[in-house]
Length: 505
Picture 1 (tube, helix red, strand yellow):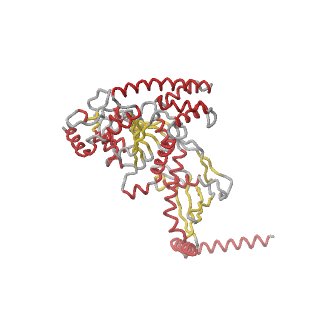
Picture 2 (picture 1 turned 135 degrees about the horizontal axis):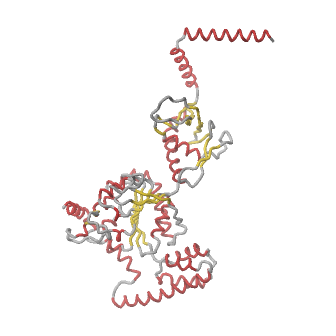
Picture 3 (picture 1 turned 120 degrees about the horizontal axis):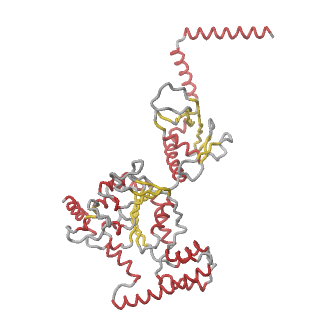
C-alpha cells in the first residue's frame, strides 16, 4: 500500500513538472488559440448549433429573454421537461399563475417539424468592484440548441413566433385596464407618474353571451371583430392603417356601454375612455392618442352631449365650426372638427396599430356627416329597444329561464307585445332584478308592464299618423338617412379647409 501512494505522488510530481514546462514553453495566447481551434473542429463535426439568450444585454434587460420565459410557460406541462421541478410566478396585475423551467433544466419544443432544445442556465456572477448599475448576483439565460440543417428554416420565424406568442400570453394573463384622461392630459394634467392617462383594473363582466341583443346581429359584430384582430397581414398588404371604427347609437339604456365592455373582454383589449371636455386643443388630442397602446379600444361616449357637434350649415362662419366643451364655460377649450377627424382618420391615427375607435350617441341625426363615413366609423350598430330574442336572453341571465321552461302561452304573449312596448333592456333588467327571488312574479309584472307600454305607444302612434308624421318604426332609419344624405357629406375636404381657416382667424 505504501508503494502505491509513493507511485501516485511521483506521478503527480511528473504532471506538475509537465504543466510548468507547458506554461513556460507555450505562452497563454498560444494555449488559448489551441483551445479555440479544438472548439472549432468540434463544432465543425457537430450536427448542432447553439444560441445564448442572456437576461441582461449590457445594462439593459433583454426583451427576448422575457419573451422566451413566457413562451415556455405554455409548454412546461408537456412530458418533455427533464425533471419534476418547475418554478411558479404570478406577475403584477395578473389573474393567473404561470410556471416555467427551474435552474439548469431543459425542455424540447417543435416548430415546423423541427425539434429544438431549450436549457435554462444559471451561474454565479463574479463580484463587482464598482459599477454604475448594480447587476444581479446570478447570471441567468437560455441556451437554444438547433440542428444545423434547420437553422435557416427555424431561427428567424421561430423567434418571431415566440415574441407573438409571449405577447398573447402576457395579455391573456394580465387584467384589463380602463384608462381616463387627466385634466388637460396633453399638457399640464398628469398623474403621479407623469402620464396623461389614469388607469384602474377593468372588471366589467359583460360578454357577448350575456349581451341582450339580436343573435344574428351579435354574430356579425363578433365575426367583424375577429376578422379585424386576425388580419394584420391584410391591412399591411392593402396599405390601410390597422384600425377600425364603430358607431353605437340608439335610445338610452339599450346597452351601448355593455357592448363596449363585451368587445374589450372578447378581444382582450384595454379601454381608453376619452373625455373630450377635458381636452383643451387639437395638439393635446394628438398627444393623448400618441400615449395609447396597441390592442386597445378608444371610446368617446355620448359625443353629441360632450361637445357642441351639430351638422354644419352652409355658412362657414357659424360658431358650430368650433367644438367647444359644453358646461365648462371655458373659452380656451377648443377642439376643431378637423382636429377630431384627423384624430380618427388622419396621419396621427396611424401612430399605433390594432386599435378600435368606438363612438356612442343617442341622436345620430345630430352628428356631422364627416364623422359617419367609412374609415372613421366603419360599422354602424343600432342598439335597439328590446326584441323577443333579446328578452329571452335577459330572462335567462336574471331568472335562469332556458328554452322550454316558460309555457307557450306566456311566450306568445311576450312576443306579441315586446316590440310594441318599445322598452329598453335596462328597464327590463330593473323589473327582473326587483323580483329575481320570485320568477313567476317577475314574468307576470314584466308582462303587465309591456302591455301598458304597448297600449300607450299605440295611442301615440295613432296621433302621429293623424298628424302626418313618421311612425316609430321608420323614425330611426330616417334619422340615419338624413345624417348620411346631408348635402355636405360629399364636400368634406372643402369644408374641412374652411374649418381650418376659421380656426386660424
